[in-house]
Image (cartoon, rainbow, N blue to C red; front, side):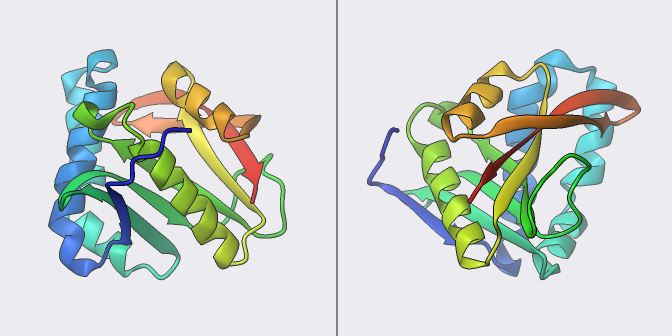
Length: 175
């Protein structure tokens, strides 16, 4: 796996709400805008990446946000959430990897690997025995990345993008 010694991972705090709103909306758009209508993207971004939404998620004790930075510049982030697992997910204490996004210009430079390593460590330290996620069936790049990290398909569920129901593949790995 690529290692970039300049990547620093830190926990996000409430002062990072604006940064996460901007970074989240931008990286989600970079990843999915070309394959979805502007209306569906707009609806999803407004609902998911507002300052109020990010502030609330940062305040949630079940959520952990990890920011990747290079030279003080935010290059990606991940969100873990300890809650009810989707059907098909196994384990006594699984945690969901809700998001793992890297800015387009930083793809392939070790940011995703550094974030995933930090997520696995975070999950282990918190006593979780598995990490699970949903990945869009049309996002082959992400699926390949997760398979490299020993995630395996365990089911599927619907991801609602605006008014468009999309199919996500559920994947999980042991910690």
